[in-house]
Image 1 (cartoon, rainbow, N blue to C red):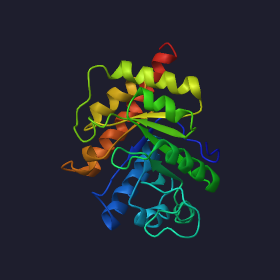
Image 2: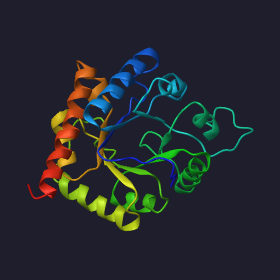
Image 3: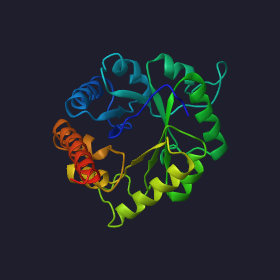
Image 4: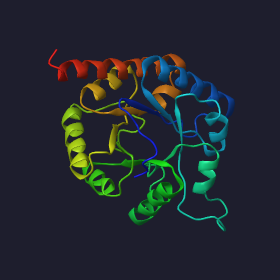
Length: 240
């Protein structure tokens, strides 16, 4: 686990995949940066690798993570994403093992180690409780727990709270320093509120924001919901 970055809950990840790039991506990232300050919610943006420097130099609070990188060292490797280059471009961390970019477990472990070595935090995706337990032993900074079947659907199940609690517990029994984000199927502010209220430290969205009629307004709706749900939990925890 890279120790040079502290992610303080609540937090939110914006994953534009290949929907947005260039100036449009920068505009949304700047909006996210302002919302991060307004609502005091840590926001992580995972743009296309070619946009890392464009975004990173404009951010005051939001964090820029690469969508992927490879475990290779400096030298040969045409078409690969070099960890040192990701770091030099201004990224703070890297997203790994997304359902659209799965890695064999041995490769994943080597890539997390490379990120640690060059000073990049890691967000690693887990498909289910069993995956989360295996990945937790690799000591990433954040685990994203999201079922591939829910990605892009805009639907979450009725058993969310139980699943959130179970995955949190198994991860924190292994390493209490790992943050846990519960994503997939997040399409509006109410979805965000429900997930955070149900025990998640963070959540995130792609199509719910990018494909919304007004992505800027939807992003604000979601970040506002993170803040509201987290504050509600604090009141309950304090016995209020």
